[in-house]
Image 1 (cartoon, rainbow, N blue to C red):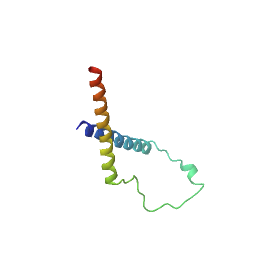
Image 2: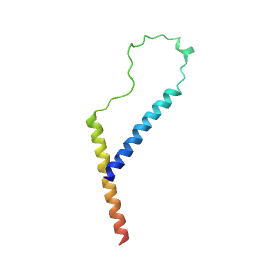
Image 3: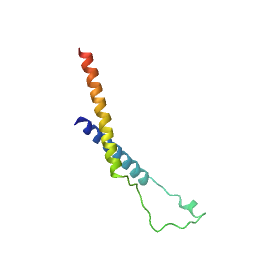
Image 4: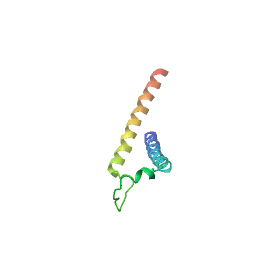
Length: 85
């Protein structure tokens, strides 16, 4: 159960971090309009922001990180138990 909690926290930090970086980059973006008029390009009529990942990939990374966390919890539990006696 601890491993699932650790995996959840790691994924939450990752998603919030990428969201925050995107938000700050968008907020602090200052376009250079003066230099933009030298080369005129046609823009697409539709724009998509973001990325889509497979739900199966997200599920596998969640359980993969949980498995690695469980290994570390087990390993460090054995090390602490070994050092105690």
